[in-house]
Image (cartoon, protein in one colour):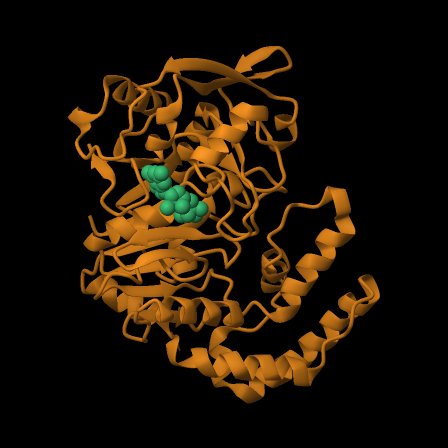
Length: 424
Ligand code: GDP
């Protein structure tokens, strides 16, 4: 298998970073193809524990090339901060193992500021943004009103374009929000400071990838967030502002002719959701608090407590279909070991009718979860490495999920460490 995408099936935070870190051993190149620094992938390996936001999760493997594709929102300042943190922890990042597409658009300081201003204006109607500037960035990208990383190599062209953008952006900042205008000096100082640090990594990664493809290199595409946050197929408007689905990988990576041989969909053994928007299977009260505590469900970027619920079969089956998943990695099964009875959301009830459909976003607030309980296994499974060594009830839970969502569960993860998994 030469090309593989690792994607989220649910609302994000399924444990994709952990699976990319594990599976990179079989690949030559890892590419992030969408999103920005607004979410986090947590990776634990022999080098330590890392919260990655923009860097691809393959940076820990010697010999693996990591790429930020053209579909990614590149915030030079945040990226440089993250790179220095990782380098301080002993990981080498040079143009030999990390490159940025010259066609990636730059997320500029005003995108972050506008994100915060708009969320403040919306007050209790806010989207729950992480205020990293992602929504204003993608709006500007599609309006052709930001600059490309490669324009750093054409300073005259870039400066002229920035002057035009500054004039336009200040109209919004001052007129709509009553904020301070940007000055060219401030903007150029930022670009020059961080541009100088990152320029060595910026190149024509599309050309590199086309060559790599013809050389038979194995390529892994790493997604951020999950199917239910996809701009087109998720819980709009509580989605992210890019396409998180595997189908976007060829476009956002810069390898437009790529065929995906394998799509590994990552599913958590229960549900979590950060931020606003419908979350049909949400649990409340002590039951929810206990699950949040045992699963350490607090945002990697924001530290916000995640909303939690049982595994949602309806949402997960939809996610599998939208992603075109060929294999599933079921993560955090070990977290459920404390439960005597495990709740599962098997269907939705909408207007008195039972449905298996992940209903239209606007209808989801009226949908209720149908919850069934299956027996737990009551012992710690975090040390188990073989399928036949799992307690029977744990195996039954996995088999039940597999049947219900219609996709083979190839990996069962029972701990955050690299080797804490079972391959079936
Ligand atoms: P991502 O954005 O999809 O990579 O997910 P996050 O990093 O936000 O969340 C996954 C969290 O769960 C991280 O802290 C991982 O270290 C942890 N994790 C991943 N797989 C497992 C597992 O099987 N068991 C346990 N206990 N923790 C896991």
